[in-house]
Length: 309
Image 1 (cartoon, rainbow, N blue to C red):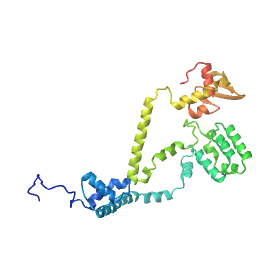
Image 2 (image 1 turned 180 degrees about the vertical axis):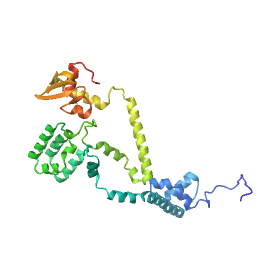
Image 3 (image 1 turned 90 degrees about the vertical axis):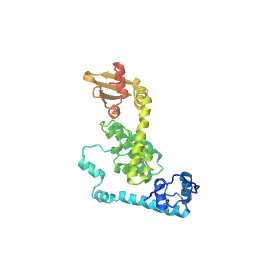
C-alpha cells in the first residue's frame, strides 16, 4: 500500500523498466501479429523505442512474440472448435443439388456458364470453334436458338457434344431461364468479383473474418450509394445502354397491334408476338430483363407510348 507519492522526479529517462515484461509486450503487439505473424523481434524493439521510449532486449521480444502467437492460436482454436459440430452435421447431408431438388422442387437452379466452359476446355483443350458455339448456346434466348446451337456443336466439334450434354447445358442457357428474376446473366462473375475482395479476410480467424467482411460490405455499399447519388440519368446506365442498342434495330421491325394490348412484329422474316400489359415477347428478352426489346420498342414508337410503361 503506497502512503507517499512524490510527483517531482530528478532522474533522467533511460527507457529501462522492470514493469514491461514479455507478457506485457505480447499484449501490446497482439493486433500487429494478427496482421503480420512474421513480425521480427528487431522490429518490435524499434517500435517500442519509437512509440513508448522503452528499451527492451532482443530476448524479451522473442519471448513476447511466442506468447502473442500462442494467444492468437488459442483464440483460433476456441473459435474453430465449433466446426467439429458443423462437420458432423455436414457429413450427414446429401449434397446441395440433391437437397434443393428434394426440398425445393419448383425452384430455379442455375449453373455458371463460365465454370462449365472451363471444364470443357480442360477435357478438350485448343478448340477455338467450341468457344464460339458454347457461348451461342449459353446466350440463346429461345429454345429454337438453343437447339440450333446444340446441333451445331454436335456436328462441328467431335467429342465435345457428349461432354457438354453430361453437364446439362440447359442449366446455364437463357433459353431455359424463367423470367421471374429478371436476370439474364449466365455466369457468376458478380459473386466471383466479390469473393476476390474478401480473400484477405478469409485467411483470418472466424470472428475477425466476419467482422472484416461486414466492414468491407459497408464500404462497398456506401461507395455505390454515392455513385448512385451522382447519377443524373432517368434510368440506370445498363437500362439506358440496352434501350439504345435495341433502338438501333427497331426500324427493321414491322409491327401490327392487336386488341387488349397484344402485338405481332416481323423482323427479318421472323415473327414475334407479345403483350404490352404483361410486358412479354416471344423473343424473351423483355421477359428476361424487364427492359423493352426492339419489338416492344417498335410498338411503343408506333403508338407514341412512353418507354416507362
